[in-house]
Amino acid sequence: MSELNLQHLKKVYEGDVVAVHDFNIDIKDGEFIVIVGPSGCGKSTSLRMIAGLEEISSGKAILDGKDITDVASKNRDMAMVFQNYALYAHMTIYQNLAFSLTLRHVDKKEIHRKVMAVAAMLNLDEQLNKKPKQLSGGQRQRVALGRALVRTPKIFLFDEPLSNLDAKLRVKMRREIKILHQKITATMIYVTHDQVEALTLADRIVVMSMGHVQQIGTPLEIYSNPNNKFVASFVGNPPMNFFYGKISADGNKFVTDDFSFDLDEKRKIMLKEYINKDVILGVRPEHFIPKGDLKAKVEIVEHLGAHTLFNCSINRTKAKIKFEGWLDYKEGDDIIFSFNQDLICFFDKRNEERIR
Image (cartoon, rainbow, N blue to C red; front, side, top):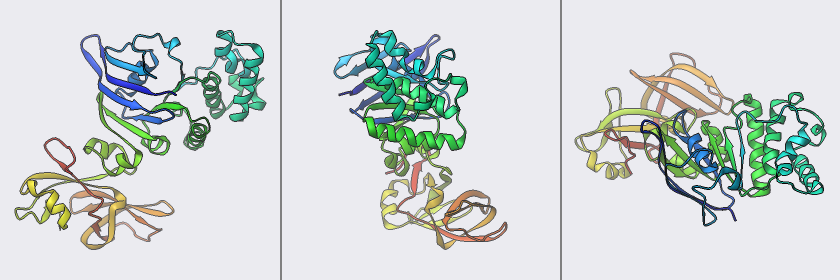
């Protein structure tokens, strides 16, 4: 069992600089948690507090019922995989994999058994006598993973492990990490700035901004039901479209300077307290419908195979619209559309919180 409870974690640096505010989460045994957010949001600092590499300014970290807040990192039974691999260049791959076990004076036969088992799992069998410089980036990242795996720790920690790889290799390694988690069913906490990694890997995602946790939820919850405009804008590629306007005086329409449309009955009820008030409409590119009474002018067409992405203008308002299929439009053409109102979001303009 490897459950981790983080209670009101806070990190304050010299000069009263708060890097992380009130981080709370209960992580279940075997869960894959991804912490995602832009650079400087506090995600790596949060991971380093969990690992014991950063002192916790206030709050508690509880691992399997034991308070580890002040426990040294080497005694927390966690293994960390770093962005830059952190391999020992003068050692062979076998020695790199065995190093942590050697330090713990594990029996040589047991070390060999564990190293060979991990090497087989990660397809490194034929690389064991090589040095790190002789391997590709993907192979070196697998060695870094393997060095963590041989320890069989309670929790695996990943600090942007794929950011140094090219796009094709990132996709491949992402798949391998997912398969690995399914095989060993270990508790994993993974930090990234890449929202695609978060959506594809996580059981639950923690979205952070400016040191604050914005939302915790499954990938579907984060994507479909964002708590606020920041979460809606950060998760999703292409990003969500935002249109600034207000609810009409009779409560029947959403109105901007460039277009308006009739609200369905559910949206009228939801927005009844916002009559004649400013709101923000959020629409993902795939939540446009290719029929209706609204019109957009095509500026750029991007064919994506199964979909076509249009960069458009609705009068003076810019929008990205994605329809299924390879559609034959060109610059200057008009697209007729409406919105799938079951899937659109409205945000309060004052605090950018989602209106539910």
